[in-house]
Length: 389
Image (cartoon, rainbow, N blue to C red; front, top):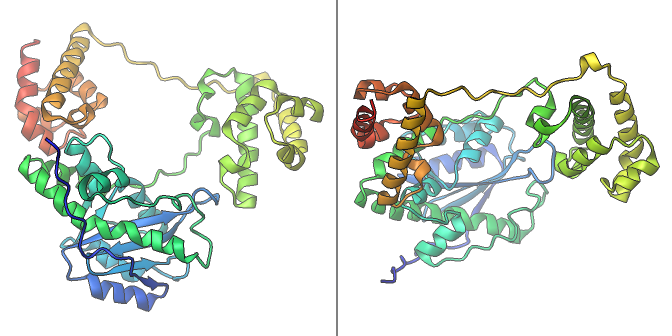
């Protein structure tokens, strides 16, 4: 049976109001403060600058669309009460990055969050991008040509602004349709609790450790390679900051790994590696060679060793619990027609198997399990573990 698609929101249009003053922000608050739900979308500039930032905030109901320019507004304080108002639902699609960015850039916390991407996953959709969901629900095709453009440029071309306005206006009606289906499947409370936790995510704090710890493939390198890699990473970081360019546009990771392994100490050797483009050889060649030469002079006693976390040895009974919990989890997910990780993540399976809870109170104490999982699956899990004792 072919599923009938919902009618596209009747109020959809590309009309919008541009906001680039604090007075304009207050008008946004006045317009939305009595609404039940607001769609929110954002555009960033991570492809073009070293320190990414929010360049546009799109906020929409089915009647009004505002595009806010935070690059022109001296303070976003006037908009904070809107995001912190628990009576107003803020609808995002894939909210994790946006929640972190709002806190990082403006110290804004978001209350009463609803994530349509997360909701789509709990409804068993396999493709959960906004394009896929809107096509599935409303037969609407979004134009994503401008997704990776430089949103920090000013003035923005009219077609980019129109593109930015197009996404947010669908979010409130989309949330309404998804909530209906979640309620029908008795999963709305699951998503609401997950969204509440999602609203609390925060940007990662700056780690003072070596940069190579966050470099893919570093764990397979020898100590002298780590010395060279760290020196090159530090050099790239300095250049990226000075030129305000993203790290990957300064020198890519593949190039850094090639340079680390080959360790050229002359321009001819450097060019032979083909790690850098002719332009990069001209810009960075001498500095790269000097960086590698200096790193190679580091005394062996100062060579780092990549820290390895040994997997704790598990008792046979714990391993058996893990296996049985995975089998139960996969069967439960199949019956619910959702991704297994939504039922239990690998980390939760490990924690449950290790702690072996024998009561609801004990299973509640497992961090990250959430109340909805305890309520829906707790007794089944306890009974499963009891039979393994």
